[in-house]
Amino acid sequence: MQASDLIMATTADDGKTANKRPSNRWTLFIVFLSLLVDLLGFTVILPLIPSMLEYYSTHDQSGLYDYLLKSVDGFRLYIGGPDTERFNLVLFGGLLGSLYSFLQFLTSPLLGASSDVYGRKPLLLLTMVGVLLSYALWALSYNFGLFVVARILAGVSKGNVSLSTAIVTDITTAEGRSKGMAMVGAAFSLGFLFGPSIGAGFSLMGHGNQGSFLAFQYPALFALTLTLLNIGLVAGLLSETLPPGQRATSLGGGITGALYLVNPVSLFKYDSVTQISCQDRSRLRRLGLVYFLYIFLFSGLEYSLTFLVHQRFGYSSMDQGKMFLFIGVVMILVQGGYLRRQPAGREKTTALVGMLALIPGMLLVGWASSATMLYGGLFLYSFGSGTVVPSLTSIASKFGEDSEKGKVLGIIRSIGALGRAFGPFVACTVYWQYSACVCYMTGAALFSLPLLLLALATTTPSKLKDT
Image 1: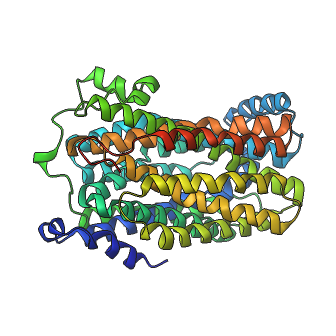
Image 2: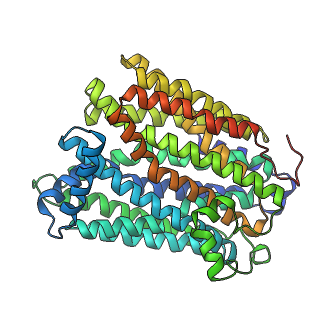
C-alpha cells in the first residue's frame, strides 16, 4: 500500500482549491497517520478478548461477570448453540462489541454536530483524551466491572473516524473526495492488519506468570502510549480545517436539537440537518437506509464467520489469524489500487459492484467444502468490504452545507453502528437455529435489498448535476 501516492492522488485534483490551501496534502497525511496510530491501538485488544474473559471467569470479584454470563447462556439456549467454552466466549465478546457499537450510535452524531460548531481539531482531541482514559482504566482492570467501564468510555469517546472523515471532506473537492475516503479505508485496513498481531505479541511479555493480569496490561500500556503520541501529533501538527466563518452557530435548538441527534427515528429522517432541501433530505434518508441494511447484514455474516470456519474446517485461532490476514491484504490492495483509481462520480457504481461481489462471495463461504472454495468466497467478501463503506461515505459527504458536514457524517456512522449492534446476534440466531448454509444464503439474498435501493436512488445533491 503506497500511502503517499494515495494522498498525492487525493489532492492532485484540487485545482484552485489546492493553491488556496497549500497544506491540504500535509493535512491528509496527518489524518492518515493519526487514524493508523489510533487503529493500531484500538485493535490490539481484539485477539485478547477470549483470554481476558477466561481470566475474569476465575478472578472477577465484582459479580458482574457471572451475571452477564447467565444472560448470555440463556441466549445460547434459545438459539440452540452448543454448550462449549469457545462458543460462550465468542457470544460474550459479541455482547461487549454490541454495547460498544450501541454507544457509538448514541455519540457519533453528537460529536459530529459539535465539531460543526467548535471545529474539528478540538473535538478530535477531546475524543482522544477519552480513549486515553479508557486505556488507562483497561490497564487497571483487575476486575470485570472496571473493564466494562473502560469499554463504555471507549465506546462513548470513539468519534475520531467520523471526525477524520469530516476533515477529509473539508479539504477535498468532489473530484478528490472518493480518493480521500479510500485513504481512510486504507488506514482501517492497515490498522486491522497489524494491530491484532502487535497485541498478541505484547501479551506474550506477561505470560511468564500464568494467571497474571500482566498479559493484558502490556497491550493496554502500549495502546495508551500510542494514544499519547497521537494526541501530540494532532495537537502539534494538525491544522483546523473548518474556519470559524463556515461553522454552525449552535447545536440546533438546545435540548430539542440534542434529542434529534440521539433519537433513532429522527436520525434516520435526518431531522437535525436543517440547511438542506427537502429533495436532498429524501436522498439522504434513502442512503441512510441503504447503509444501515448493508452494515446490519454484513456485520452479522462477518461475526458468524469465526463459527463457520471453526465448526466446518476445525480452524484454530492461528488458522483464523491467517484467514483475517488474507482478508486484510486483499482490502488494502483493493483500496490502494482499484478504489483510489475510480473517477469522481462513480461512487454509486463502485458501491453497487461491491455489493454484487458480496452476494456470490457469501454463497461460496456458506457452501464451502474446501479451503479453495472458502478463500474464493473470502476474496469477493474482501473486495466488497473494501469498497462499499468508503463509497457510501463519500456519497454522504456531498450532502449538506459546510457547517453541517460533521453532523451528516456523524449520523451516517451512527446508523452504521446501530446496524453493527444488532446484526451479529440476528445472524447468530439464524446460524444456530437453522444452519450455516441457511444463514449465508439468507444473507446473500437479503443483500439484494440495499443493492436495489441504491440502484434506484439518486445519490447526488440537487445543487449538482445528477450523474
